Image 1 (cartoon, rainbow, N blue to C red):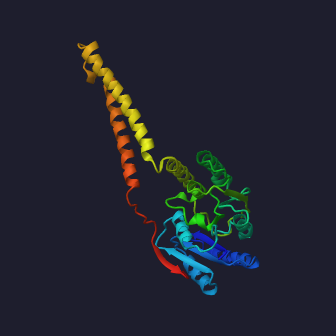
Image 2: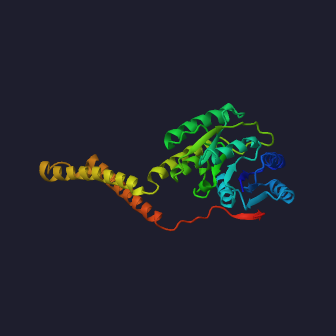
Image 3: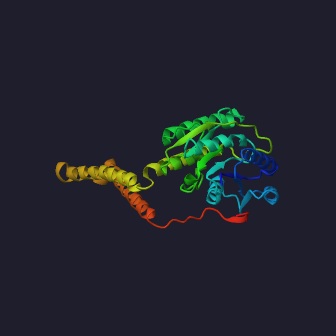
Length: 315
């Protein structure tokens, strides 16, 4: 199979039939063998009924329905697990991503040998205040922190070599940072393509300003995981030793001063240096223990539960 198109969605019933017809037309005109995988992330409208109708008239349509809303990252993870195409294309279900971009994205993976190609919505049709400016700030911070030189990390339209999606772990809210996850997994050939962005045709956006706050918090998480995810003792242990050492030096100074230099002076507990020494030694010990526990957790079996599938179609 040439292409798997993975489409996570939440309450996008109005756009699904038009999106399917558009994708099918592009695929058939380019003679691609393909599948379209819709992942219904707990929709409360008739999205799943529409997906079932589409699957009945088109065997290339497959569907996954979550028991509840688990999030876009979990939806992509489920789609990646089921994808069979040599190239995996992800796109949003709101008709803002243009399926006409798929052939060129496919060629960049197959012919130009990119591991991953991310779309860049250079000209956007979103609110300047609500999306454009926060998005620019977010992308700048992501570039500086991750070292991946992309202009639009959060673009839903991306193309992947199948090997990439089978070897990265997308969970939590990490769908924004799939290029970073791919880089950390050893896939270095990451490209970018300017893609057409279209105004939303139906409904309203499911994302608010809180996604950018969450995005920055996730950025800190992925920076930490990239640098110290496999060796937490290198961070927490180092901080613990430094802080404990500072506290120990203060305590040593107070002890020498009391025993030899000024034995008749005020009590050690009356001096602020005593509490500074005590606090830093306690914090240092806690940091060290945190690093040690982190190392133990890494070596233990992790709980891989992420989502619960309610129904599947055509798998």
